[in-house]
Every structure is written in C-alpha cells, then in structure tokens.
Image 1 (cartoon, rainbow, N blue to C red):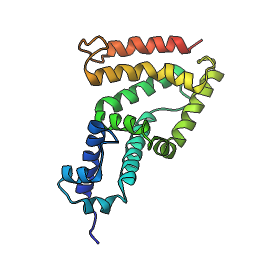
Image 2 (cartoon, one colour):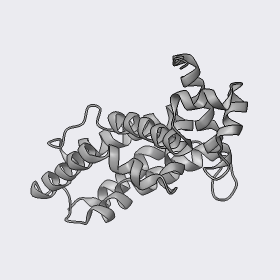
Image 3 (cartoon, rainbow, N blue to C red):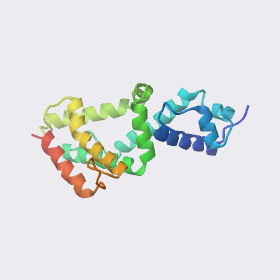
Image 4 (tube, rainbow, N blue to C red):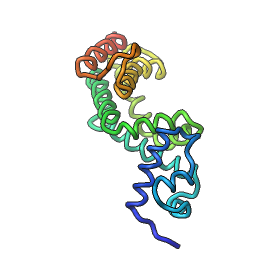
Length: 196
C-alpha cells in the first residue's frame, strides 16, 4: 500500500476547491481532479474513499476553519454591539482572505452535501451564538426576534456586500469595492434595526 504524501494531499484539496468553485459540485469528478493534479486516480483513493468522502472532508475542514475564525475573540457575554462587531470583523476577514474557501463552503452548503457538513461542524458555534442572542435579549440590548430573523438582518446585508465585492461590481454594473465606510454605514443600520 502506498503512503500518504502531505504535499500531494494539499494539492488535491486546493485543486478540488478550485474545481468546485469554478465548475460546481455537479461538474466535479475524481478523474478530472486527478488530471488537474497530475496524479493517477488511484492516488486519490489513498486520501479519500470516494468523491463523497473528499467533498465532505473538504467542506468540514473549510467549515471548521471558518467557525474557528468567527469565534476568535468572541464571547457570548459581550455586549450586543461589541459581539456583533466582532462577528462582522471575523466574517469579513475570512471572506476577504480566504475567498476561494469561503466561496467553496457556500457552494457546498447549498449542495446535497450541505446538511451533513454543517451538522458535523456547527454544534459548539450554534450553542455559543444562541447564548449570545439570549444574553443580549435578557440585557435588553437586542429586540426579541427568532434566530432566522436575527441572522438575516444581522448578516444578510454584510454577505450581500461581500458578494458584490467578490464580483467587483454593483447590481447596476458599476465597479464596487467593499470599504470601511460602507461597512460602518451598514453596521450602524443593522444595529439600529436590531436594538430597542
């Protein structure tokens, strides 16, 4: 049996992420991946049992990296404003510095693999965020809202702006860059919508 080569495994992961982002999950295949990596298909099976295993493991690895970043410097006991600001900064950092991985994770979340990937990695994160929301409501720093409404108001506009930045153009086709000024303007409007 052949041994694992860590460098090859990293190349395989990176190429798989690129292919998923550029071709989608439907266009992704082990034969094509092996060709892109310059290795035999048999070599892929040293690292992964099949296509589903590869996709699931990549999604979990990216998701863990993302959720670890989101919790960096964060505590559910923070004031609502400070905690939300921390969440925004961490999400912005990950999205702008790991664009390919962030895009791949979003694609995988929307795929048939999404539920299995998200279920495996979000337990602690969901618990921490739920505590944050409940504490903020108890401290009367956040209006009582369901989690889904909270998420869509708290992060929906941020992710829309980051997507426009990734595309490099606004909805009208004009060039678009996500700036601190836009971030602060949007954050203040979100805060206004969610606070008493």
